Length: 461
Image (cartoon, rainbow, N blue to C red; front, side, top):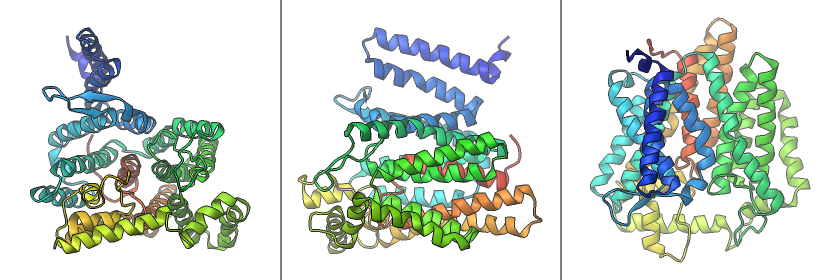
């Protein structure tokens, strides 16, 4: 009688029915429309996760980038907690974490056998230990949940992307997820309503993200998805879609005026060209040279790094790094730091609230201040481990007999390896690990690539 509910369409239909009932009940009790929608989506996500986990992963990667900035303006009250509320972005993150806990418990025997399990465990266990001495336990707990969500997305990618066709679908979804942010960015550019500050008055595209730098970092990761899809797609229509997506991403990336992302993209593409086609390196160098010579804005952004003024963002970062690192040594916390996720708290306590932003724009500085030498070591291990796994799989693919599958494997792992190296370099001057959407996308791709092209394969459904 109830066998229909065991199928994906039947389960989704049940989820929609339950969600509709919750939505109407909340509206009747006086809840706001946005709050009612957010809460009623939870049953659909839960059922979707266990009936079609790839659809769940695709939904996250497709929808979440378009909600990054907007979700900050929708708040949801916490039941039984007076005057306490969370943003829609935090609500989505909390839902993902709760679903991740259920998913990991359900498949606990298989989770331990996936690649990078020990590395993610090391990062999370280390972060949990800092709770015992953190100067801001709430922020430490929040950061733990965020890192866990990245692990969950990586595991979903590994478990659900079981063949090359599905991997290509994932890449296409990543490119599609850029559509609304890019359109929003060009709307801002055309109307001159982008992001501006006291240092740089020209409007910068930020799309649907909170800041141009975060938007640009996401575009760099998405460009790798486009490059992989263009390289391994068989049909011309798929290649044309990937090429169009890449062109849109590159044009938009330029007008974010995010110097770090520019450098990361040049490092990413430069490494790929150096390994794949070293003879065209001189031709490759022409494009950034032309941009520098013929675009005064680009010249100003580059020269500001070479000759920073006392009020430039680069000088501001150097001062913040010096102050927080000195404070860490003066308090004798250079071994274990102040606790995961506490950099902003320490900076505000140290420098006061006269500065609006306390983000270090450096994962290395953040790791040391929050975790001392031990935390910095954990960050380095976590950052280098994926590159080592990627390199091993790339070399394995090169040693196997030549076939279309092995050629695609080499290309996929080469592009991902170049991307990870470029992001590690960017981590010196930007908050790469703290950019959740970029990390979700990055590790979803890596999980799928390891499952489809890697040596480690998890049998069964």
